[in-house]
Length: 160
Image (cartoon, rainbow, N blue to C red):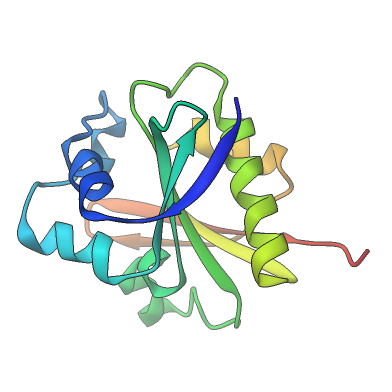
């Protein structure tokens, strides 16, 4: 699968807001609202397309990728670039996550020259945690917010 990064636009954002994941991943479902649309359009979100210009997924960087409550417990005290990702639910669970996320990591490493990248994942999402560990992320911290528990994980890039 050949992948490309594009700036988020209204068409991609509206598609993403309609995505519905099966339980327990429905935790990641968005609501279709002007606030949700603005979140995708006014923050550093990027669309990931395949060679047919189909929307495969998206990623965001910076504060948009953080769980706000994490600041109160020091989850983001280390100065690192944060990333959040989402894959089209029609493509999840098919073994495509490694290729998809590896592509995003390479793009970020090449574009931003980061030494390390941090992500935050819901602790129930063992499928994602397995993928992140496989790709070199290590667990840094756990925190709880109301009915959800989260883990921060960091990947350190080696100097070449």
